[in-house]
Image 1 (spheres, one colour):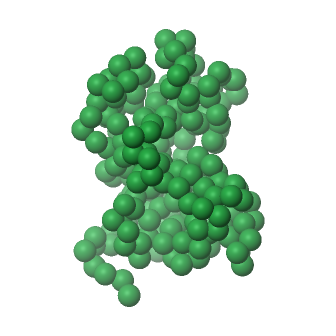
Image 2 (cartoon, rainbow, N blue to C red):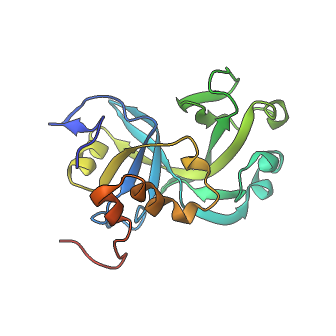
Length: 196
């Protein structure tokens, strides 16, 4: 299924930064089964994203004490992906998308990555909420485009609140249902049925 910004004939038509990658039922990699990934970077050399719907039980405050108050419910660490699980990526949603903020790198609108070395106390009036991800998902040159062409991912527009939903386990079917039509039907696809 082709969407805006996908690779056509091996050539990327435009950056997919800020888009959602929604795993199709054909994707059988257990690292990405029924996942929703926000692409935080997509360039000719590859892509980087974080899995939005894999919450752990580890409170953010237990690992990054000063950041716990800014974390959105559930205020826990998320499994961002299989690459470098000991590293952390912080997503933030600003109160206003036009404000410049030290340590903030815009992904789309008011959502972007935030440098965890910045003092969180200085961010309170500008940051609405954060999510912290242990690890990330990464793709080399052309790898993501090939996976999309092979039918492993739907490429969909993200809403500002997708990365900060209160019930992350419901994100995969929720994103598919809001597309309508046949894509909405995929949200009800049984998890244990194999596609050939």
